[in-house]
Image 1: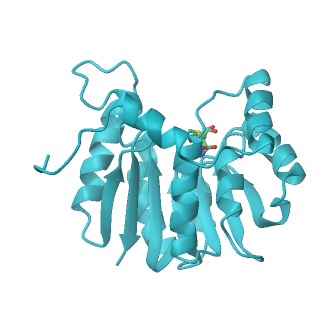
Image 2: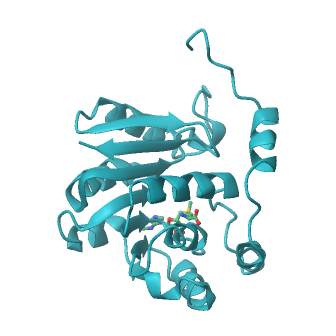
Image 3: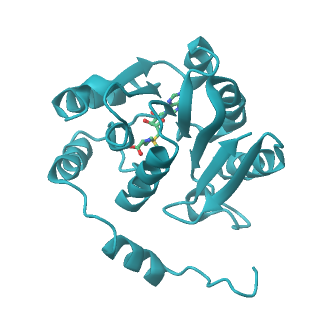
Amino acid sequence: MSESSTPVTAEHFRYIAAHTQPEDPFLAELKREASAAGIPAIWISPEQASLMQILLKLCKAREVIEVGTLAGYSAIAMARALPDGGRVRTVELSDKHADFAERWIARSDVADRIEVHRGSGADVLPTFADASADAAFLDADKENYALYLDQTRRTIRPGGLIMVDNAFAFGQLFDEHPTDPETPAVRCFNEYISQATWVQSIIVPLGDGCWVGVKS
Ligand SMILES: C[S@@+](CC[C@H](N)C(=O)[O-])C[C@H]1O[C@@H](n2cnc3c(N)ncnc32)[C@H](O)[C@@H]1O
């Protein structure tokens, strides 16, 4: 830690949340209904959604690729940061999650900007054209993150934005005996992206840690 850094505590996180624009009623209801439908509450936080929207606006993104739709929360949040004619292509393996997301996307204010692609990221991403996106958000199975990053390198344009969730491995990054089976994969991925020379990246300590990068 550099001398001028302030260690971020739970109190800082609460402060950040309290100073972020509140979530709108539609997304709050989506989360309630998703939980009632038995979908795990593993969507991004409103603070992370706000950060991602700011970054998407700054890079003037029109086309976004996401891996890991879940209930559609982050796809809807990202789509709201795009201009008219923008598009989020979001990839989801679980039919149950994709069914729920499609219903709620259809009811949202950005229904015309989101496509749900069913299947695994490993199968679907290779079908997307080279340099066809301005930004990508990776938020699915951690053991395939390196593969997804390689696909992202191909599918986003130079200067494109890369965001990858869960750099802190569900809070277990430094645990000697992590209980989450995906923790080793997160650690490997953190090494992989930090050594990649084609992307300048950094972990933003929001939510569970979000990698943010720019492709050279
Ligand atoms: C953390 S959730 C995504 C949360 C969502 N991005 C949000 O914040 O609203 C991870 C999702 O990835 C999906 N998933 C898991 N393995 C996958 C794979 N191989 N390909 C695509 N999606 C996958 C899961 O079914 C789950 O819905």
